[in-house]
Length: 84
Image (cartoon, rainbow, N blue to C red):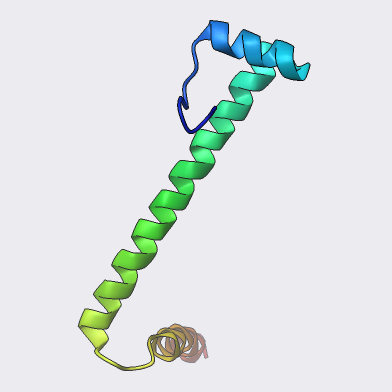
């Protein structure tokens, strides 16, 4: 049902609720949660692909995870040095 209509009308929510033994509000919340999960997965996928491509363009074939960790630790080490 979700694949064909992710925002059902109140009548459809009532029908679904009757069929599965829930309140219409519970059905509405299920659809809302499902839409949110779908959107989150799409955004995560787009961000991951975009960030990966951006990092590849900036750093070429270097080990990006290692570079990120080294930069992060460097900042903490600098902070520790300044406080002494």
